[in-house]
Length: 355
Image (tube, rainbow, N blue to C red):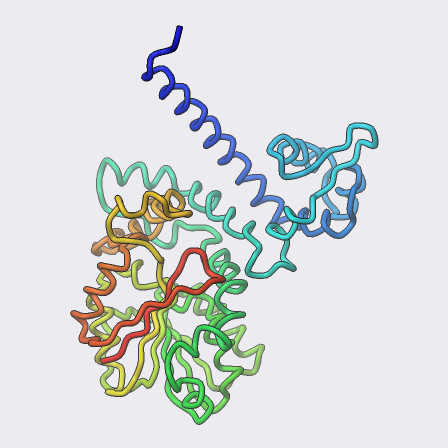
């Protein structure tokens, strides 16, 4: 006798939930494997026992053994019951080790534990409204910098900046450049080193990240680069910059339209604005097949939306989407907006805007 359709659907959802929970647990193990360097070491030494892997990574064997158990049953690590050795297949390693650069997806796993640390505060916001401030997030800027450092920064000069016609030649001759929401400033440091005749300034609200960026710029002897703690909603510059950038920063702002308006005013008449932001639609029904849909909506709820609301802001959220982004840019006076999708970046697109 055939089971009712409702039963089949319920069973399939049960299985999906189990997959979700197992995936969430494994994500924490991937984060630990990345942070401790276990993936890198396993790829380096090949098949080995838990004792050998722990010794090679200078870690506690009991913890390493349990970690290996989790990744073995998840299908990431292979285990030979005869030799009692564990191995990381080459195709798995490629997506999990630092040497893979932009292909290293293990970096993203860290966001889950970072966001989990503020769950209690976010839950309170569900009842009371408001938001969770930047100060509550441990390691967020560190993880963001690592993410940017392997995806954006290496492609910046060769792939991203050339999207603006004639920009590289101008930067070589010397122009004024500003970056909004610069974080630890890795993108600006890359540009400042490549174009010593240009002048660069980065603005961010977080004192900790600006302090880090200034120290790092000094260590790298980048005299053409400065960083300042600044609220860009109060930016009062007119016709000052030739080129302005914002890398995954506008949707976090308390007043994104005001920030874009200020960017437009700060640009010279022939200047360009380059904005990296999430490649998604503003409409949830159009994101059903998005490869990172659940992840990005979660990041929005647990970080981007709530840090904006914590400042009595708009709470635009990570998934504000191409449609809303284009509307905001048009309102800011950008008459030309071109959207580029880069093959190396699975979550962002690049907006090139001019007045």
